[in-house]
Amino acid sequence: MWSLAWPWVLLALPLPLIANKLLPESPDLRDAGLHVPSLSGFAMLIDRSQAEQLLNWRLWLAVIAWILLVIAAARPERIGDELDVPVSGRNLMLAVDLSGSMDQKDFVLGGRRVDRLTATKAVASDFISRREGDRIGLILFGERAYLQVPLTLDRETVKILLLESFIGLAGEKTAIGDAITLAVKRIHDQEIDAGEQVLVLLTDGANTAGEVPPLKAAQLAAQVGLRIYTIGIGAEQLEVSSLIGGRRNINPSADLDEKTLTGIAELTGGRYFRAVDTAALQDIYRLVDELEPVARPEAGFRPVKSLYYLPLAGAFALAAFLIIVSLWQNLVAGRHSRVQTDVV
Image 1 (cartoon, rainbow, N blue to C red):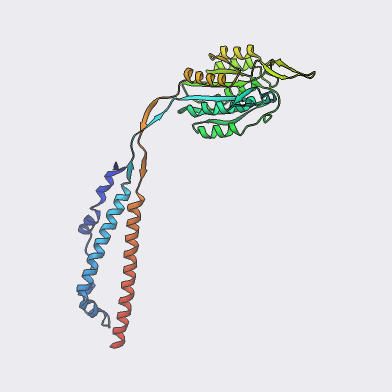
Image 2 (tube, rainbow, N blue to C red; image 1 turned 90 degrees about the vertical axis):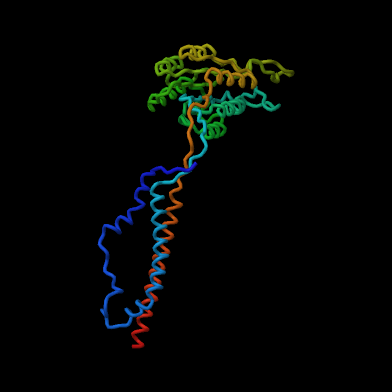
């Protein structure tokens, strides 16, 4: 659909006619007597019919240029089909543990054994792709907590920076409390007015570093309305080789502090989940989708493409052509006048 952003500008179309009626006429020097001692005036009288024809088509070009200029000022635009835009107003932060223990290869992905972080990247990336309409941020933590991506609607950037993270990037220990505090600080500093503030925190251990105890950080989160879903990741049983030969079973998640993670979730109105394998981790993120549903199309808009530059370019092209023709005519007339003078 085509339209004009400022259709009232079209009222300026008759301005040249109004100005022509109101302003006094300029004297027509072609009807004057011998005002200079040359024959150029006679040449103008002889070629008067040709000059009138030239003036006629130049006038029409000027009219077309004026019309194009007014249309450009009215800002023509093309309005596209209506698009549904999901808008949830939810701010969703992801906090991912990069401590040394995430290197434990007790998960299976695509038929091969992988470390915990690799499995987390694969599952969390799919989760991010589904969160259309949410502003998503990414916190990476180990011994220290870093804001890798501030809250944004650009889900692709969040996924890329998550996939580029690696174990030990933030230190070997685990600062769960600092990660929660950083999420609280970002929400408080930005003064974000949103209906939902959610943090999904994934870790495989206990709080062994940082300045803020996890439960104290959870209390701060509850004060600002930040709901936290905690995920404890790691298998409960893993078969490894024994030093004396043979194989034995161990618990690779012995350091996981489930009590603290459960307390964090309860204090903030969230839930604690236990992911012992890749399938369980996928189910947990799907459950989070259900608890924090993605937005449904709520608002529609039509993309608008402004096209004012097309008539504007046409007006400039006609104006430039008229100027070039005028200069060329003056040049020819000057040469003709000099020839007539030389003949006399």
